[in-house]
Length: 556
Image (cartoon, rainbow, N blue to C red; front, side, top):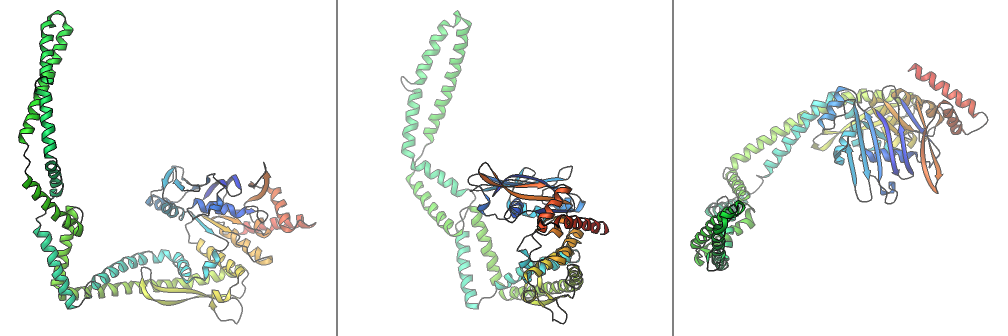
């Protein structure tokens, strides 16, 4: 359940903090007051791509959603996404946007937008003003069926995905054998050349790095010899450091008996003299071992040319070149045993295709069985929404290509008037009817849906009168088992509110801002009066609407 929404610097909203309750939460206000900005802010927090129009100049825009998560399965699902609620079941979702970037957090841990969407997809579902248009898409209709049938479909869909992956792999393997004899012989010849070149090079791990080091040493031979010779002279030659340090030791030894501190200095000088002797020997030994053979440098250059040529063709590192060699050998064996392996690949492909088609058939059978229950449930819900003579069914067709979700295409068919044939939604439903159909779908899915919070942004588009009351009753029924947040212009829906919020546009300090205020009982009546037209009889009507709404909620 969504406990709190905090919005800052989003479009006209300077700062808003809305504490939401259980049941039906209704938001009302004048057109243009900023009601949909709140939904935009929620979408922003959920990771939906948001337009820069939500930003106020250079100020950072932010939205926070505080959820309370209950239920073992929901917590396990969140844990699987590494987004566990705290000990009290609280989960904080936050997103901050500037002109240049956005930062998403879950419980103060920075996360990617993809992870944010995966987590919030378990917690909240938003039905926007234009989402009902998606009902006209066959893919969306199949998704609705799958959401309804997910408990039966679960293992079948998982098996289908695994079988499809195996089928695709078998198809790729078989495709690798779709070459003619001439091409096969040509590729074999080329592979033989590549294998021979790699094996004949006698490659060794670390060889390239060692040769590069040795080449640098030989290339700088004269400069190294000169520097080492000078260093030895400075350390051990006439007037060098060794001679001067020896003089210092002799001078200190002659006076060390006069003071214990002088004895300490003498000891340090003698240690330094011993260290210097060791350094001189090491430098001398290094210089004596220096051998700069121009012939060796030439051989190294030739070997490096060979290795660099191999690098350009087979991989930058020894490991990459060895991987290329193994791949060439594997492909060579594949081509040498071409006929036998092609036959094996054909058999494997046929088996994988048969398995995938069998599972697709099983998934299709489940879908068709569940479609009967789904369409009847939607029909019943539509009757509740004032579609008095409505019929609903689902028509299945088979896609040309198998996919990871099987081969089904599904489409809702509907008849809204007696005697009319069932037709696709796009040919029958008006905008207002589509809105109610989507509400019916949401109501049906809510019975099996584990998502706690549902948001409806102006689900009431295109309806009024008795139909509006039916929509209000349906929303109240959904709100018995879910938290529902609804933006509306209709008094019938507003009267059903368990928590009612008014959104207003005000002028403050020379700027226009949007505010959100939770209404008490009398303030709710006042808002209903405004929605009813603020006539002489409006207050009486408002109180009657509220009384009827409370009576209805007690019955359900």
